[in-house]
Length: 130
Figure 1 (tube, rainbow, N blue to C red):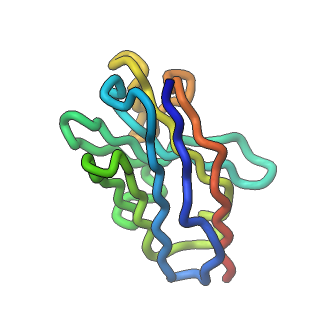
Figure 2: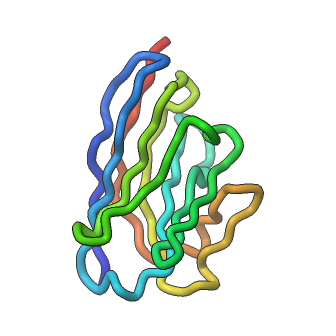
């Protein structure tokens, strides 16, 4: 079993930065990729970024390219989402997720698909004011 715990959410002004963390525990060696998803109020959840843990390769949805960076600390079993140049439209609940199989790591136009993810955190709220 795998547990994912997000942290680092909060409030910031437009143009500011936040860094989210996702700590994984349990059988983490089985994970092929980890992703960040977000859900804005009244909208569907969307994939923001994906990290292939073994290859350290990353993918981003167009709306965050150049502003967000996903990285990992393998010793801490933690992935991060550094968010810079934040915009009000970045507001939402941010979730960390992980896939136990390579087939679960599906990316479409830089956005990871949630149906392939096997494990989810409970989310951390990000609020950006203009």
